[in-house]
Length: 274
Image (cartoon, rainbow, N blue to C red; front, side):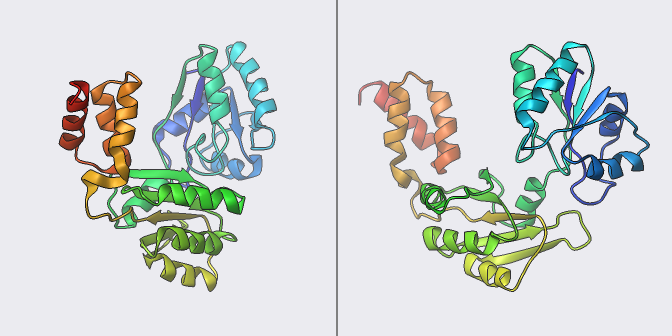
């Protein structure tokens, strides 16, 4: 495969698949965030390949270099310091460029902090919305949290340790004191899951916590999901755009938790002019 995104362990170095090891050994070049960090993993599994540094500050320039490697017929593997490239780590731009240029590209299954944290939270795992890291600017964060507040689905975020207390407090002010879980250092020696309300998690953070964190927050517990957030207005607008009933039903139920039968019945009536 010309281009492959390869997940790497987020903690325990044994959390890597046999397929990932094979792909890395067969690659002509490996792009990684930090050659020193990746070097530890590659040495562990006897992998010695040319390394190219691909990080957030050089992603565009490095992606162009790697596209040239693909054009020369070389196999490129992309890894991040930990987890699956292309989500909150570099890799998406190169992958998108490769697809647009007609190259074969693949993503291997493997380690990610998101899904273990979602299950460890004890909150409903489906449906859920993953947002990544909250915005840096306070105004943008407030706007984001306000837009997420009505959603019935479970919410998941990545948090930076030195910003976590402030961000959790802001969420509580906008979303209310919902049930939540803060899961940190997944697959590492000091893995921990802190469950409680947002206020309790903020208090725990005020006493100091380190490591990579995933925050999972309960969705809006509105009493009547069939009337939730006036989903009918959005569903009707989508119908007017010419989208299929099946597509609209899937999207509305995923976003708002409304019963599929209620959404379908509403759309069919609207389609008949009722």
